[in-house]
Figure 1 (cartoon, rainbow, N blue to C red):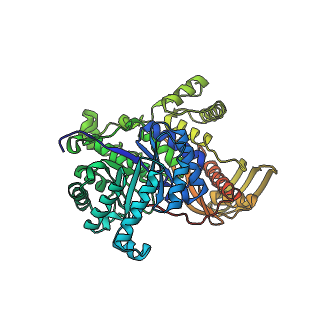
Figure 2 (cartoon, rainbow, N blue to C red; figure 1 turned 120 degrees about the vertical axis):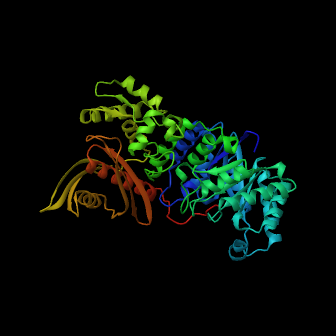
Figure 3 (cartoon, rainbow, N blue to C red; figure 1 turned 90 degrees about the vertical axis):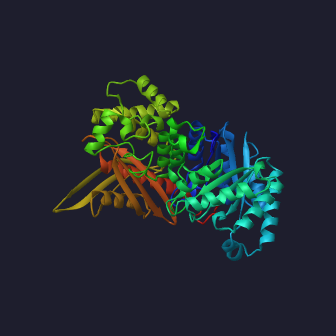
Length: 518
């Protein structure tokens, strides 16, 4: 590749990323993430699957109203009702795209759709033409393209481009492809589809074999000019192509790929942390680009090399992805103005009430913790920007435990509309006892599906952040909280998850399976 070509970044965190179990977001959270994706300067935001649920319809509509620069896409099967619903959801968006898809592989044709090749092509054409009645920008995806016969894939792609599709997306729906093979698919389409110059070639890769990023980059090298991806690689099963990885690979190895994106890479870390916060899915410490160990050096040889010349063991600068190395910024004597200024420097915008609550939390933390780092501030703000109503709020707790003592917890919770309630329970440990006492107060018997604890910064006085997942009555939700006391953090995180569960139950939503996309 001799020219420096622009790669379109199509972010599907709000649609495909949210399809991952336990990753559902509220409408307000989706709008917050979309605003951050706009700051990141992604080109396309796929905001949801409008026909899937009223919530998905609202999220596509509200994201379309909220952002100005990115194209907002809504997904639809090649079914009239799906396409009409997507068109309605996108009618207020400044820049909109309808993304239609239809399975094309033999296994999907014969076992899922029970239709022949000619019927598939006809349905694809009709789907694209109907979408064009609502938007001029129409993307078509032949689902399971990587397992579709090459000649048939060529026929489908030619037909939908003739019908008016402006982007052709080639999905590796089940993560079956390997980079060399996937590159051959793209190269074949680029050379054999007679009208391919009339559409942008895109790719959408899943990570079942751990090759989503590799497949996407191989496709770019072969001529693809749009990559569909998610923040932190979220998505069904093993996830999707990781946005931050593919973007930084293109930026770091521009010499090889000869391609660039419009992404503001300094917003990557903030975006990763926000998505982790709202979905409750923690980023593994060894995750490329955004993991907390991504720029850490423990080996003595590595440390010596980095001190002498960073490029010996660092191919990217931490600041290029928005990592501030936990720079000390504030202390107990810092004022409200300094606090607001640092929030602005971190790209965080709060309303006056949220700012006041966050500042009060900061002052309380400063009384317990001598040094306040950026990560501490971000953890405080994450809780203040939670949009879930507090049906249950922790007031106080007391625990006893020890090698010869049965762990016991007494918990006091303020219940909205009912006042303060106190109860006690025993458990396998102090945290388990707290959770059992909370269940007695709330009346919900929750199953703790996942629990993680990590220190936000170093030092004995570091805040511990708890991220957990609970299930009750067929619903699964997450909770997150950070405190210097890990039992308090555990209790607040648990109540946060319980509040989310209660909100979903009261809104009348059901845990039934929604239609799923590629």
